[in-house]
Amino acid sequence: MKNVKGIDTNDMRAMVEAFPSLLCLTKPDPSIMTVASQTFSSGLEGVCIAGMGGSAITGQMTKALLAQKAEIPIITWRNYEIPRCVTKKWAVICVSYSGNTEETLSAFETAKKVGGTLFVVTTGGAILGQSRDLPVALLPKGIQPRAALPAIFSIVLPIVEALVGVGSTDFSKLSVILNGLVKRWGKEIMSPRNLAECTRSLVPLFIGSGHLASVAYRAKCQINENAKAVAFNAELPEANHNEIEASHMYQESGIVPIFLRSTHESKRMSARFAATDAVYRQNDCAPIHVRLSGLSELEEVLAITHYLDMLSVDAADIRGVDSVRVDRIAELKRRLAEGS
Ligand code: PA5
Image (cartoon, rainbow, N blue to C red; front, top):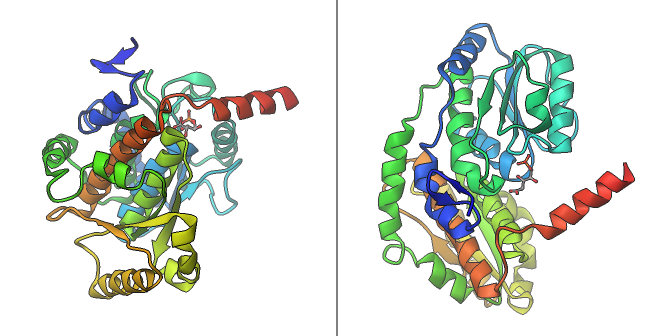
């Protein structure tokens, strides 16, 4: 049994149960935070967070939470190289749990050539070998990258907060809050197990808005990767301009919309959710609403992610699949390596 701080890293359920404590597993070294604060004061023009899969999602969440407060753009990048708008007046954060993901290595190499401030978040691999003299945040090894989200987030969010000068999050407090919220599963919202049972032969379509759009995308990826099942995500208001026209087919296609609701929604956004719900119902499809009251935007992002991560593990159990193994991703990487 491999383990990190007593968590069995061969057991996805154990890793998801440890979500709140993983938020406090590590934090950026003070020297990294000093580089980030100095970079902010030096007239930074933008922040680019590069990474793939489980390593990328914290960038998307960070952007969703900070973009409206930051005076400079925060962008995420899931591809080779980096966009041309990223100059040496930008900071780039390359996140790769393994340190060996080829797209992220390509982004890293390009960012090095561009010459801005470059941060690396990893456990090791090729990226670490090429990061001498760079600010590197080392993550503990052995966790599945997607299950390491809380640990990665506890590094990426503080670095970006310092880069854009917007204060800092207390992760120990967050961890305590998240632990307490688990007790509300099965009361205020259906337990993840019940939701997994109710949707067992259906295809979930996670729909979020604002900061919860990133959570909808994460949930889709977790159902794909952990439960080896089809899932989709969409975002309001955009989905009201296209996706909604397909809702007459949801029932026959076995699609169940799962609305991720925020207590911070504007009145107009609440009206959109209500109207979308009504249109879907007219088309014989009843959306499920997931909402936890009394939380900040950041707490909502983490709490609903934790809840839906557990849904993906329960869905995997019900389907009788191993949520840790990712054989098709391994097979694809093998084929790409053979072809190169
Ligand atoms: O969660 C996973 O296992 C994947 O989505 C990986 O995160 C993805 O393949 C990228 O790998 P890494 O996170 O090691 O850069």
